Each structure stands twice: as structure tokens, then as C-alpha cells.
Length: 424
Image 1 (cartoon, rainbow, N blue to C red):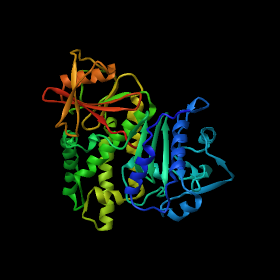
Image 2 (cartoon, rainbow, N blue to C red):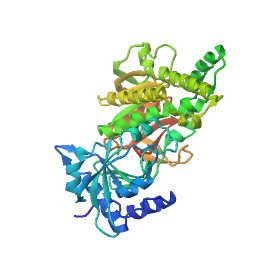
Image 3 (spheres, rainbow, N blue to C red):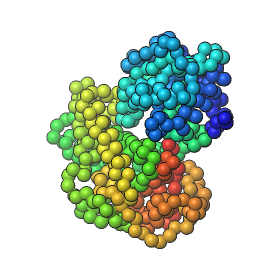
Image 4 (cartoon, rainbow, N blue to C red):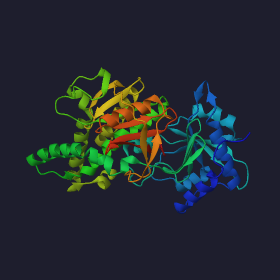
């Protein structure tokens, strides 16, 4: 049976792996590597009791894992006796016992021999929490070995430890894409909000001499809220629309061009993110004062591991999950630039059609190509209309197949970016 994935993936993966420098754990021989990837990809289309499979493969022998285990890893290795031949059906049977967030299925191949499943490795959830917080401090929670994350039918992320290398998705090989969050124009939209938060911090500083916190910390935490929300919508595979509209100072009683079926009252509870970010800043200041650090930037923030900071980061992740769950209802989820939740089930009421948009070739859209809109669905077209009529709107459209389109208008033109979905 032919496998529908890019035939060049093994070679490209090997090249990316070698770019990362030497490792105690070597990649399997080409034939075995090919079979491991092929089997994992094919197994992604199988079901167990009507559920799609989600699992992780850890490709290394138990002995090699012991040699490359990072100090922070809490990896419990459980070997089978005897081992099992790697196959689609064996992965289907094992996947329910290997919880995606906590356990990996161990795979190895001796030389040119066939790959086999040697057992399970329990990793705990530390690796996932670190991804969710957006902090990477160099002390990796996963071994420096090949890890295959089977995420959904036809989608396999291949990593070296905690570092993504390539991704198979819908028969295509992905290595990168437009990460619009790293552009100049998008953070600029939120600059007034970051300045507003920092003014609140400065007011507190006036009362007592405290360490300062960089604005880039505020921006990074806000970005990870959006990334996690979009990622959760994507994983749910029902699609959704998330809108960010300009803030006003009178309670956002009206969202131009959108009728909200479920509107949140203008109470302090909808400003959860502001409370969290101010608490994160205060926690960083307290910790920095104890450590004798005068200024906390993003690099310093990445090193912090106190319990209160972890609790606040988990609260940001929970807020992102809440946003994603609201997207399961038909209609758009609407937030303002302050990340206040205004409501959900939003119907876009702008009627004027937009027959053509511009597809960005680069992050800043200095180069674009024209594209007719008759080939996209209602969800995309309605966001195009809204952004054209109200250029301050920033739209994120998540397709059922997992693609994410970022929509914004400038100079009278609607511009779209295919947001990078590479990674978890």
C-alpha cells in the first residue's frame, strides 16, 4: 500500500538533525528511519474505539537514553519482555496506554534491522508546560533523541528532543512558514496596550524602589496567550474565528460590524488577562529583588522557575483554553486589544463583498500577490469583509483542516498571511 507522505522527508530530516550538531543518540539507518516515519504517518489515520490516535514515539534504545538524559528529565523507562515488532496495528493497540501528554512509546532499530517497540517511557507533563509557557531555559525536559508527535490524521511533528525539525501535514512537508507574531506590524498594533500595562507598573514603582520589568515580557506573555488559543482551536478540528478589535474607553458596548449573540457584561472578570499580566510582573519583581537583579528582560524571565510564576502561567494557558472553547460555538470570538473577552457567537454583518485580497509573500507584506476569494469558505469571506470595512480589526481564521489565516487591512487592501502552524 503506497504511503501518502513526501518521499524526501527522511533525507530532509537527516539534514536538519545534522545541523543541530552531534548527539549521543544517532538517527536510525535510512531504511529503518523511513519505516518508522512511514508507520507513524499511516497509524495517524487509524482509530481506536472511534477515536483518532494521538501518541508520541521516542526513537532510541534504553541504554542510549540513559546516556543522554538531561538532569531535568523525569523519564521512567519500562521495557517490554519481549519487545514487539513496530507496525500500524501495534501502535493502534498501544496508543490508548500511552497518554500523549505523559508517555512515549519507545522504538529502536539495530543497524539495518527492522524497527521494534521496546516499551514505554513516562515523561510527565513538564515538557508540555514549558511549551505552553513559551519559556525555554536550555535545560530540556526531553532527551536529545528523535521524537515523533502524531497529532491528528496525516499530521506528524518530528523533533530532536524538544526542538521541532519538520512536520508532515496533509501529505506536505513543512519546515517553516510565516510566524506573523514575529513581524513588526502586529506587535505595533498592541503597543498602546503594552504601554498602558507599563504605566500601571510604573505607578507601583513610584511607591517603592523595585526592579524594573521589560516591555518585551508583557508582549511575549500576550503572544503566548494567542498562540495557545489558536493551537487549541486547531487541535479541536472544528475551525473557528478569533477577532481582535481596537479598544475603547466606554466599555466596548458596540463592536463595529459584528453582532454578538453572547455578550459579556462589562465587569472586571472579563479583564482576566490584565490581572494576570500585572501579577506576573509583580512576581518577577519580587523574585528579582530577592536575587539582587535590577532589571528583568525576556532572557531573565526564561530562567525563573518559582511556583507562583508557574501558577500564573498555567492560569494564562487556562484562559487560552477558555477562548478556544468559545470558538466551538458558531460565530466569532471577539476580544479587544487589551485581551478583554467581549463575547462570542459573533455574526459578521458587513455585506459589501471583497472580490480580491492580497496574499502576503513576506512577514511585513512588502510583497503580495492578488488572489480571488471565490475559492474560500464563508468564514474567510466574512472576515475579509469585516477587515475591509473596519481596518482596525485583526482576524484569525482557523480552518477545519488546521490551517490558520491572519487577516488585516492596510491602505484599503485586505492582506492575508498563512500563519505558521509548524510545531505543537
